[in-house]
Length: 358
Length: 261
Image (cartoon, rainbow over all chains, first blue to last red; front, top):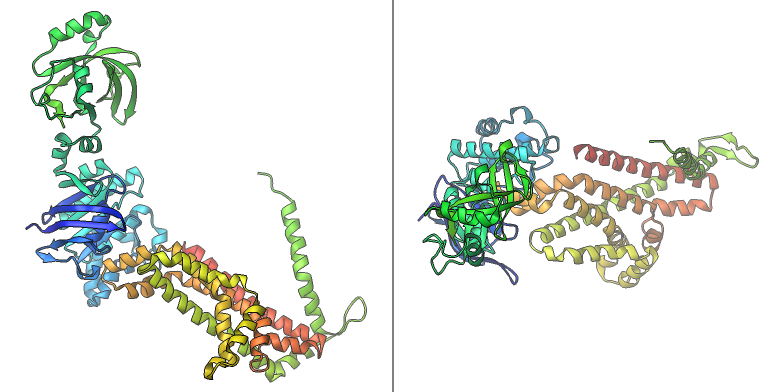
């Protein structure tokens, strides 16, 4: 048995079956992420664990104890909400001390614990402020501190950064990661942002329509997606139907793993597609096919391509290419010599091992 | 941007239009004669008579009490109802809203006569006029109290605050009254002030249900109308002053709330 176990969890709202037979485990000290689009059931599962929603069937265990029917206050779980949910009539210090006061702890212990978490989230100068005087990031830090001070067995974070701007989100991602390392607390993080999930998580559980599509470490999910949905959600994969892939590479060119009969589609990561240097540039298409076939090796495809357009994504330039009538995305580092105009003909190289059969 | 000159002029004209009757009433209450263009014989006699009259003080006190009691009862009833609706039966919210808005459409006289017809011969305490008046005012102010409390609950996102308190170890009822209610208090008080103003200005319900049994300031005003015009003006000025104080309190609370936001 793991530290947290969900066993056969089902949850319905009327006729809407939101969670379907969820079986999921989280190890102690892990930061697990529930990733998926809006409405896939990830937040509902989190709320079920918190006790804010009742499950329709199934059981949940924390540290071996069945918590399925317990009240939220008896579960020893902390939760940080997307909308912060700070108490507007209380100062930062009062917000953080709220739960401890309910436990009727001695004042000096409350003071010590509150001061400790205030240091942890770096809010020393804001303790006497009211929530309305704080920025979004500061409010979320208070919400984090308010949960951490209770020393919960598990900390749940329900899209806590989605209301923040990109820069602040990155900053708080790093802080959450640091707090996780410093405290060793078991965390379950809900997000729809795959980049956020990749940065923060020890393990990612990818949700689709109330079910877990795939679970694994971020690198595993990124490099070995098992389904088309996983490939499209977790990376910016090019996912081609088998017929499209065949058309792109020419018949008989399939790598062994890709050629198996039960393959329905093939996924290729944009950054594994290499744009070849100038001497491979194709000025005479009728000669190019022969040249490329000669140059092709056992472990890579060499294909003729035409640039459709390119868009910069930070330090990466994303090309849309036309390869024998099939559209492919290719990511290259944004450098002056990697700039090709629309209509430019070139050659792309794709290693066969990077063509993942789904 | 070029400022429009018509705005301040409109405000000035409107202020004159609204304040002129009040000014005339004030003048009428502090002069003994007004038979020519200008009044004559400045006096505070009508005010001293008024404050010396014990029945005026009692009627004013009755009005204050009959304003507060229905407000407290209605506020409590709505808060408890909203607690149940938020926590257990969110689907009922729209029906509660309709129910609480219905009194808007019922005229005071219809409400009072209906209550009188239904309860005047009822046994025991049910036919008590003070109780009937209290209950009827509870119904009359229901829409104003409900709207204020409901919009305050919406603005603080009450369900989320309760959930946050629950996650910190609070029970639902404790979370509602310890976390949510303090945050909507200014909204509740503003609704209460508005309701108090409505009850303060009411004559129809008070006269129909209270009459001689429970003489309020409005009934006192009505009776004074036949005795002396100047004294009536003095009563109106005192009632206006009390209502003004209530409004100022409400206004200062609203300003405080804005500062907190």
